[in-house]
Length: 263
Image (cartoon, rainbow, N blue to C red; front, side, top):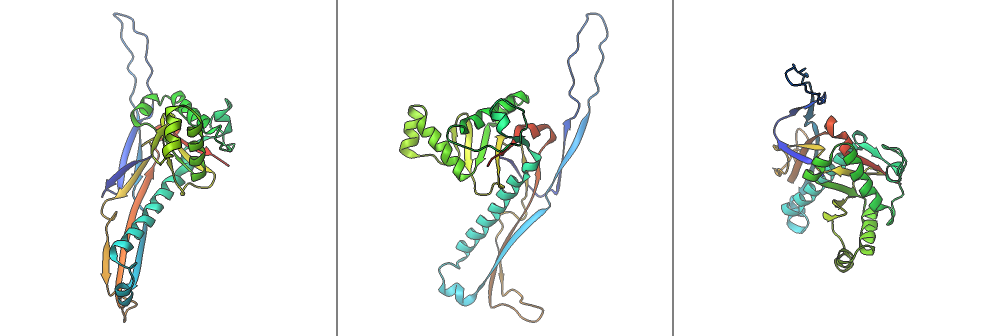
């Protein structure tokens, strides 16, 4: 859903054309008025960190099948990845609101919460694509695609809609069910338990940027006999990893990422 940037640079400076030029009438043999190009700078700063370290006694390492380094780092990595996903979805205040009015022909950027059902979840998908087109995002939508990060209960309703509509696609959904990442209604659909309450992410994929510090991401550290205080140490090993991230919703793409307000 986001454009992930792996780097050891702390601050990424970006810019965009802040004044959109307009075409002008041309008269042959006469001078033309040039327009001034202007840009505004934005930056993404990788500064938010999170870590997780687990200490395991030497005796427990020898006796328990759950204290092997592979299992421990697998669990640590899963928890840190969940943190990253939660933080990405927590950026919903930077997105454009989408509510009941946006799928019933009313006012755009509506905050009225939608009660998602098997009969209106397709309206949410179509309404999102309509808003993207009205915001002149059609070309980027065709290039990057549209995606949704649904709650599990929404994903279930999407599956129910899929199984009840069409012929070949419905038969396939009835036979095999649906899994995250499947393409339907012209969009890619995912599910997550990490959405903020009453919010679902939708819109053009890779419009939002996520910066990840390469130096720390995915690195596994084993610390033998870690210090307990200035005079003692623990008889065992510490297993440690961390992540450092940053976020950016470019000003020019705010209208392409939607905060779907749901009950």
